[in-house]
Length: 349
Image 1 (cartoon, rainbow, N blue to C red):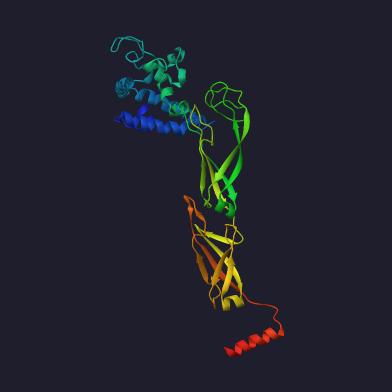
Image 2: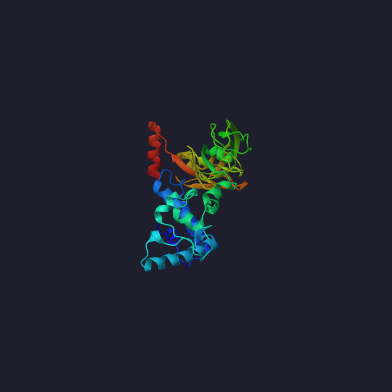
Protein backbone atom coordinates (compact mmCIF):
# COMPACT_ATOMS: atom_id res chain seq x y z
CA UNK A 1 0.00 0.00 0.00
CA UNK A 2 1.34 3.40 -0.97
CA UNK A 3 1.86 5.89 1.82
CA UNK A 4 -0.11 9.14 1.25
CA UNK A 5 1.51 12.43 2.18
CA UNK A 6 -1.53 14.48 3.21
CA UNK A 7 0.56 17.57 3.92
CA UNK A 8 1.80 17.47 0.33
CA UNK A 9 -1.76 16.99 -0.93
CA UNK A 10 -2.81 20.28 0.70
CA UNK A 11 0.45 22.06 -0.08
CA UNK A 12 1.29 22.83 3.57
CA UNK A 13 4.22 21.95 5.80
CA UNK A 14 4.00 19.65 8.80
CA UNK A 15 4.10 22.58 11.20
CA UNK A 16 1.07 24.29 9.61
CA UNK A 17 -1.57 25.63 11.96
CA UNK A 18 -5.18 24.51 11.89
CA UNK A 19 -6.14 27.83 10.28
CA UNK A 20 -3.50 27.44 7.54
CA UNK A 21 -4.67 23.91 6.80
CA UNK A 22 -8.29 24.95 6.56
CA UNK A 23 -7.43 27.90 4.30
CA UNK A 24 -5.41 25.69 1.96
CA UNK A 25 -8.21 23.13 1.82
CA UNK A 26 -10.90 25.66 0.99
CA UNK A 27 -8.80 27.18 -1.79
CA UNK A 28 -8.09 23.82 -3.41
CA UNK A 29 -11.65 22.58 -2.94
CA UNK A 30 -13.03 25.54 -4.84
CA UNK A 31 -10.58 24.98 -7.69
CA UNK A 32 -11.27 21.25 -8.10
CA UNK A 33 -14.92 20.96 -7.08
CA UNK A 34 -17.02 18.94 -9.59
CA UNK A 35 -19.44 21.87 -9.88
CA UNK A 36 -16.56 24.03 -11.12
CA UNK A 37 -14.94 21.37 -13.33
CA UNK A 38 -17.86 19.25 -14.60
CA UNK A 39 -16.72 16.14 -16.46
CA UNK A 40 -13.05 16.59 -15.54
CA UNK A 41 -12.00 13.20 -14.17
CA UNK A 42 -8.58 14.41 -13.00
CA UNK A 43 -10.17 17.30 -11.09
CA UNK A 44 -12.62 14.88 -9.47
CA UNK A 45 -9.79 12.62 -8.32
CA UNK A 46 -7.86 15.63 -7.04
CA UNK A 47 -10.98 16.77 -5.17
CA UNK A 48 -11.25 13.38 -3.45
CA UNK A 49 -7.55 13.51 -2.58
CA UNK A 50 -7.71 16.91 -0.86
CA UNK A 51 -10.94 15.98 0.96
CA UNK A 52 -9.26 12.88 2.32
CA UNK A 53 -6.22 14.90 3.36
CA UNK A 54 -8.37 17.45 5.17
CA UNK A 55 -10.42 14.71 6.81
CA UNK A 56 -7.20 13.71 8.56
CA UNK A 57 -5.26 16.95 9.03
CA UNK A 58 -8.37 18.92 9.99
CA UNK A 59 -9.04 16.62 12.95
CA UNK A 60 -6.47 16.99 15.79
CA UNK A 61 -6.81 13.36 16.90
CA UNK A 62 -6.51 11.94 13.40
CA UNK A 63 -3.62 14.27 12.64
CA UNK A 64 -1.74 13.13 15.75
CA UNK A 65 -2.29 9.49 14.82
CA UNK A 66 -1.25 10.16 11.23
CA UNK A 67 1.91 11.99 12.29
CA UNK A 68 2.89 9.04 14.51
CA UNK A 69 2.14 6.58 11.72
CA UNK A 70 4.13 8.65 9.22
CA UNK A 71 7.21 8.60 11.41
CA UNK A 72 6.94 4.82 11.90
CA UNK A 73 6.40 4.29 8.17
CA UNK A 74 9.48 6.35 7.34
CA UNK A 75 11.58 4.39 9.86
CA UNK A 76 10.26 1.12 8.41
CA UNK A 77 11.26 2.06 4.88
CA UNK A 78 14.66 3.40 5.95
CA UNK A 79 15.23 0.10 7.71
CA UNK A 80 14.79 -1.75 4.44
CA UNK A 81 11.22 -2.92 5.04
CA UNK A 82 8.75 -3.34 2.17
CA UNK A 83 5.37 -1.62 2.25
CA UNK A 84 3.41 -4.85 2.02
CA UNK A 85 4.86 -6.14 5.26
CA UNK A 86 4.29 -3.10 7.44
CA UNK A 87 2.65 -3.82 10.80
CA UNK A 88 -0.74 -2.03 10.65
CA UNK A 89 -2.09 -3.51 13.84
CA UNK A 90 -1.04 -0.52 15.94
CA UNK A 91 -3.09 1.82 13.77
CA UNK A 92 -5.97 -0.02 12.12
CA UNK A 93 -9.24 0.92 13.85
CA UNK A 94 -10.67 -1.87 15.95
CA UNK A 95 -7.65 -4.14 15.42
CA UNK A 96 -6.28 -4.68 18.93
CA UNK A 97 -4.77 -2.15 21.33
CA UNK A 98 -2.01 0.31 20.40
CA UNK A 99 1.35 -1.30 20.93
CA UNK A 100 -0.11 -4.85 21.11
CA UNK A 101 1.24 -7.92 19.32
CA UNK A 102 -1.33 -7.68 16.55
CA UNK A 103 -0.83 -9.08 13.06
CA UNK A 104 0.49 -8.03 9.68
CA UNK A 105 -1.69 -6.91 6.80
CA UNK A 106 -0.26 -7.56 3.35
CA UNK A 107 -0.99 -5.33 0.38
CA UNK A 108 -2.77 -8.08 -1.55
CA UNK A 109 -5.19 -8.63 1.33
CA UNK A 110 -6.62 -5.11 1.36
CA UNK A 111 -8.96 -5.59 -1.57
CA UNK A 112 -10.77 -8.33 0.33
CA UNK A 113 -11.53 -6.21 3.39
CA UNK A 114 -15.17 -5.07 3.29
CA UNK A 115 -16.29 -1.46 3.58
CA UNK A 116 -13.07 0.15 2.30
CA UNK A 117 -13.40 2.99 -0.15
CA UNK A 118 -16.78 4.13 1.13
CA UNK A 119 -17.30 7.87 0.79
CA UNK A 120 -14.44 8.14 -1.72
CA UNK A 121 -11.64 7.50 0.78
CA UNK A 122 -8.60 5.46 -0.21
CA UNK A 123 -7.59 2.06 1.16
CA UNK A 124 -4.78 3.83 2.96
CA UNK A 125 -7.26 6.01 4.87
CA UNK A 126 -9.70 3.17 5.57
CA UNK A 127 -7.00 0.90 6.93
CA UNK A 128 -5.54 3.62 9.11
CA UNK A 129 -8.80 5.10 10.45
CA UNK A 130 -11.55 2.59 9.77
CA UNK A 131 -14.98 3.54 8.38
CA UNK A 132 -15.34 6.66 6.26
CA UNK A 133 -16.03 9.79 8.25
CA UNK A 134 -18.36 12.57 7.32
CA UNK A 135 -16.17 15.51 8.19
CA UNK A 136 -14.97 16.17 4.64
CA UNK A 137 -18.51 16.35 3.35
CA UNK A 138 -19.54 18.58 6.23
CA UNK A 139 -16.62 20.91 5.66
CA UNK A 140 -16.99 21.03 1.89
CA UNK A 141 -17.37 24.82 1.39
CA UNK A 142 -19.55 24.38 -1.67
CA UNK A 143 -21.99 22.18 0.27
CA UNK A 144 -22.07 24.76 3.07
CA UNK A 145 -22.65 27.56 0.57
CA UNK A 146 -25.56 25.71 -1.01
CA UNK A 147 -27.19 25.04 2.36
CA UNK A 148 -27.02 28.65 3.57
CA UNK A 149 -29.66 31.15 2.45
CA UNK A 150 -28.26 33.04 -0.51
CA UNK A 151 -29.43 36.38 -1.83
CA UNK A 152 -30.47 36.37 -5.47
CA UNK A 153 -28.37 37.89 -8.22
CA UNK A 154 -28.77 41.57 -9.10
CA UNK A 155 -30.04 42.16 -12.63
CA UNK A 156 -29.24 45.10 -14.91
CA UNK A 157 -31.39 46.29 -17.79
CA UNK A 158 -30.72 49.24 -20.12
CA UNK A 159 -33.51 51.69 -20.84
CA UNK A 160 -33.44 54.61 -23.28
CA UNK A 161 -35.21 57.90 -22.63
CA UNK A 162 -35.36 61.25 -24.40
CA UNK A 163 -33.78 64.41 -23.04
CA UNK A 164 -37.28 65.77 -22.48
CA UNK A 165 -38.11 62.71 -20.36
CA UNK A 166 -34.88 63.15 -18.45
CA UNK A 167 -35.95 66.74 -17.71
CA UNK A 168 -39.45 65.94 -16.46
CA UNK A 169 -38.96 62.38 -15.24
CA UNK A 170 -40.80 59.47 -16.78
CA UNK A 171 -42.06 55.92 -16.25
CA UNK A 172 -41.45 52.61 -17.96
CA UNK A 173 -43.41 49.36 -17.85
CA UNK A 174 -41.18 46.27 -17.74
CA UNK A 175 -42.25 42.69 -18.29
CA UNK A 176 -40.29 40.27 -16.09
CA UNK A 177 -40.20 36.49 -16.43
CA UNK A 178 -40.33 34.62 -13.13
CA UNK A 179 -41.74 31.63 -11.30
CA UNK A 180 -44.44 31.10 -8.75
CA UNK A 181 -43.28 29.98 -5.28
CA UNK A 182 -42.35 26.31 -4.91
CA UNK A 183 -45.37 24.31 -3.69
CA UNK A 184 -43.05 22.25 -1.47
CA UNK A 185 -41.03 24.87 0.38
CA UNK A 186 -42.38 28.23 -0.73
CA UNK A 187 -39.06 29.31 -2.24
CA UNK A 188 -38.34 30.47 -5.76
CA UNK A 189 -36.33 28.50 -8.26
CA UNK A 190 -35.69 28.04 -11.95
CA UNK A 191 -38.25 28.92 -14.60
CA UNK A 192 -39.83 26.59 -17.09
CA UNK A 193 -40.81 23.86 -14.64
CA UNK A 194 -37.27 23.07 -13.54
CA UNK A 195 -36.61 21.90 -9.94
CA UNK A 196 -36.60 24.35 -7.05
CA UNK A 197 -33.11 25.45 -6.05
CA UNK A 198 -33.98 25.24 -2.38
CA UNK A 199 -35.55 21.79 -2.01
CA UNK A 200 -35.44 20.13 -5.42
CA UNK A 201 -39.23 20.06 -5.62
CA UNK A 202 -41.05 20.25 -8.95
CA UNK A 203 -44.29 21.74 -10.15
CA UNK A 204 -43.13 25.35 -10.37
CA UNK A 205 -44.85 27.41 -13.05
CA UNK A 206 -43.46 30.26 -15.11
CA UNK A 207 -45.18 33.62 -14.96
CA UNK A 208 -44.84 37.10 -16.40
CA UNK A 209 -45.14 40.14 -14.19
CA UNK A 210 -45.33 43.80 -15.13
CA UNK A 211 -43.35 46.34 -13.16
CA UNK A 212 -43.82 50.10 -13.36
CA UNK A 213 -40.52 51.91 -12.91
CA UNK A 214 -40.20 55.63 -12.21
CA UNK A 215 -37.16 57.39 -13.65
CA UNK A 216 -36.56 60.61 -11.69
CA UNK A 217 -35.99 64.08 -13.20
CA UNK A 218 -32.34 64.81 -13.85
CA UNK A 219 -31.37 61.25 -14.83
CA UNK A 220 -28.41 61.12 -17.17
CA UNK A 221 -26.65 58.46 -19.22
CA UNK A 222 -25.08 56.09 -16.70
CA UNK A 223 -27.62 56.78 -13.96
CA UNK A 224 -28.94 53.68 -12.20
CA UNK A 225 -32.47 53.26 -10.92
CA UNK A 226 -32.74 50.52 -8.26
CA UNK A 227 -35.82 48.34 -7.88
CA UNK A 228 -35.37 46.46 -4.61
CA UNK A 229 -36.35 42.79 -4.63
CA UNK A 230 -37.05 42.63 -8.37
CA UNK A 231 -33.86 40.80 -9.40
CA UNK A 232 -32.90 37.13 -9.46
CA UNK A 233 -34.49 34.65 -7.04
CA UNK A 234 -32.72 33.76 -3.81
CA UNK A 235 -31.57 30.25 -2.91
CA UNK A 236 -32.44 28.25 0.20
CA UNK A 237 -34.83 30.93 1.41
CA UNK A 238 -32.51 33.87 0.64
CA UNK A 239 -33.78 37.31 -0.37
CA UNK A 240 -34.43 38.16 -3.99
CA UNK A 241 -31.83 40.34 -5.72
CA UNK A 242 -32.37 43.87 -7.04
CA UNK A 243 -33.13 45.16 -10.50
CA UNK A 244 -31.04 48.07 -11.76
CA UNK A 245 -32.14 50.14 -14.74
CA UNK A 246 -29.18 51.62 -16.61
CA UNK A 247 -30.35 54.90 -18.11
CA UNK A 248 -29.25 55.99 -21.57
CA UNK A 249 -30.37 59.45 -22.72
CA UNK A 250 -30.83 59.80 -26.46
CA UNK A 251 -29.24 62.75 -28.29
CA UNK A 252 -31.56 65.75 -28.73
CA UNK A 253 -31.72 67.62 -32.07
CA UNK A 254 -31.87 71.06 -30.38
CA UNK A 255 -30.16 70.88 -27.02
CA UNK A 256 -26.77 69.65 -25.92
CA UNK A 257 -26.21 68.62 -22.32
CA UNK A 258 -23.20 68.93 -20.07
CA UNK A 259 -24.06 67.73 -16.58
CA UNK A 260 -26.93 69.90 -15.38
CA UNK A 261 -26.33 72.62 -17.99
CA UNK A 262 -27.97 72.89 -21.39
CA UNK A 263 -26.72 74.55 -24.57
CA UNK A 264 -28.86 75.75 -27.47
CA UNK A 265 -28.20 77.70 -30.68
CA UNK A 266 -30.48 80.70 -31.32
CA UNK A 267 -30.67 81.95 -34.94
CA UNK A 268 -31.11 85.73 -35.43
CA UNK A 269 -31.07 87.81 -38.60
CA UNK A 270 -28.40 90.33 -39.44
CA UNK A 271 -30.54 93.33 -38.67
CA UNK A 272 -31.48 92.15 -35.14
CA UNK A 273 -27.85 91.41 -34.42
CA UNK A 274 -26.82 94.88 -35.64
CA UNK A 275 -29.62 96.93 -34.13
CA UNK A 276 -30.40 94.84 -31.03
CA UNK A 277 -33.81 93.60 -29.93
CA UNK A 278 -35.66 90.64 -28.49
CA UNK A 279 -35.21 86.99 -29.46
CA UNK A 280 -37.09 83.90 -28.20
CA UNK A 281 -35.01 81.08 -26.68
CA UNK A 282 -36.53 77.55 -26.59
CA UNK A 283 -36.49 75.61 -23.28
CA UNK A 284 -37.37 72.10 -22.14
CA UNK A 285 -40.11 73.58 -19.98
CA UNK A 286 -42.22 73.85 -23.13
CA UNK A 287 -42.23 77.67 -23.19
CA UNK A 288 -39.71 79.92 -24.87
CA UNK A 289 -38.04 82.74 -22.97
CA UNK A 290 -37.62 86.29 -24.28
CA UNK A 291 -33.98 87.31 -24.43
CA UNK A 292 -32.97 90.90 -25.15
CA UNK A 293 -29.70 91.17 -27.03
CA UNK A 294 -27.81 94.46 -27.32
CA UNK A 295 -27.00 96.20 -30.63
CA UNK A 296 -23.96 94.95 -32.56
CA UNK A 297 -24.14 91.46 -31.00
CA UNK A 298 -21.42 89.34 -32.57
CA UNK A 299 -22.04 85.95 -34.11
CA UNK A 300 -21.29 83.18 -31.59
CA UNK A 301 -21.88 85.26 -28.49
CA UNK A 302 -23.34 83.22 -25.62
CA UNK A 303 -25.87 84.38 -23.03
CA UNK A 304 -26.52 82.55 -19.75
CA UNK A 305 -30.09 82.02 -18.55
CA UNK A 306 -29.75 81.03 -14.91
CA UNK A 307 -31.81 78.13 -13.56
CA UNK A 308 -33.17 77.10 -16.96
CA UNK A 309 -31.07 73.95 -17.33
CA UNK A 310 -31.60 70.36 -16.18
CA UNK A 311 -32.92 69.56 -12.71
CA UNK A 312 -30.35 68.10 -10.34
CA UNK A 313 -30.86 64.36 -9.88
CA UNK A 314 -30.61 64.43 -6.09
CA UNK A 315 -32.27 67.84 -5.71
CA UNK A 316 -34.78 68.31 -8.53
CA UNK A 317 -35.92 71.69 -7.22
CA UNK A 318 -32.56 73.10 -8.28
CA UNK A 319 -31.60 73.45 -11.94
CA UNK A 320 -28.49 74.05 -13.96
CA UNK A 321 -28.22 76.91 -16.46
CA UNK A 322 -29.19 77.31 -20.09
CA UNK A 323 -26.60 78.82 -22.43
CA UNK A 324 -27.94 80.41 -25.61
CA UNK A 325 -25.46 80.99 -28.43
CA UNK A 326 -26.35 83.58 -31.10
CA UNK A 327 -26.10 82.32 -34.67
CA UNK A 328 -26.37 85.25 -37.14
CA UNK A 329 -28.08 84.35 -40.40
CA UNK A 330 -27.04 86.47 -43.39
CA UNK A 331 -29.73 87.50 -45.87
CA UNK A 332 -29.84 85.77 -49.23
CA UNK A 333 -31.46 86.47 -52.64
CA UNK A 334 -30.72 90.19 -52.35
CA UNK A 335 -32.59 92.52 -54.68
CA UNK A 336 -30.78 95.10 -56.79
CA UNK A 337 -31.80 97.88 -54.42
CA UNK A 338 -30.58 95.89 -51.37
CA UNK A 339 -27.25 95.31 -53.00
CA UNK A 340 -26.97 99.04 -53.73
CA UNK A 341 -27.76 99.86 -50.11
CA UNK A 342 -25.17 97.41 -48.81
CA UNK A 343 -22.65 98.89 -51.22
CA UNK A 344 -23.52 102.36 -49.89
CA UNK A 345 -23.10 101.05 -46.34
CA UNK A 346 -19.75 99.59 -47.28
CA UNK A 347 -18.64 102.95 -48.69
CA UNK A 348 -19.67 104.67 -45.48
CA UNK A 349 -17.52 102.23 -43.44
